[in-house]
Length: 233
Image 1 (tube, rainbow, N blue to C red):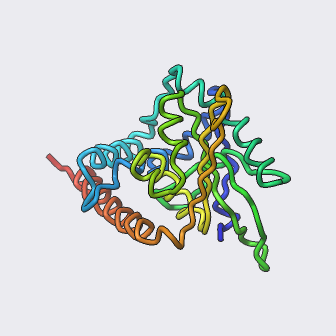
Image 2 (image 1 turned 90 degrees about the horizontal axis):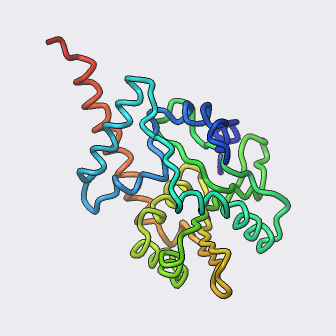
Image 3 (image 1 turned 60 degrees about the horizontal axis):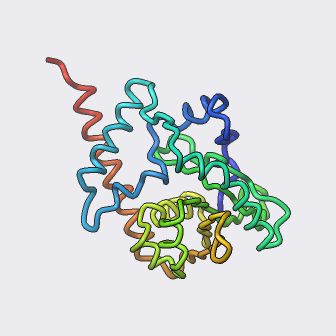
């Protein structure tokens, strides 16, 4: 279940000029889109250590390290992502999806922004929702085919590990038992829309690994931040 209080008012917009508050709310937080760099088999690898240091830097400077760099692939994804979410809604016969909402718990160093949140049920106390997460990837044709021929999360872990861990973290942070990964290419006459379901019950090992990495990340984060805070020269 996902506490309603974790669903922030901050929403990622297609217009960069409207995203200042969104990026301010994410300052210093570890996010699902980049968490894969911390998911080494036995420890947080060097790339993850660098990522941890960028989060420390954001907290101590108040300046975002995430610069929006527009590339052809990024613009392609932004252009067609909403179309993919609409296709997903039609497939599942949904009335609506919560789109691009920043999800985090107050005081937490972790947050995520699923492309869609499928609200299935409200708790009896009206404080939480049962949700499924939805992540969309609109790759160029080569990467799209590489991923669209996959049919299971395990295959995605092998072919597109960055997105795999993104979905795992989104599900974890949202308390979701299921998540959906959509690959969408609008020009493909066949295989242009591929949906892969993630079920937590079948992926417990990696959810456990993610929890272990979260603990390690926080430990490393606090160690280096405290050294900086106590430098006396």
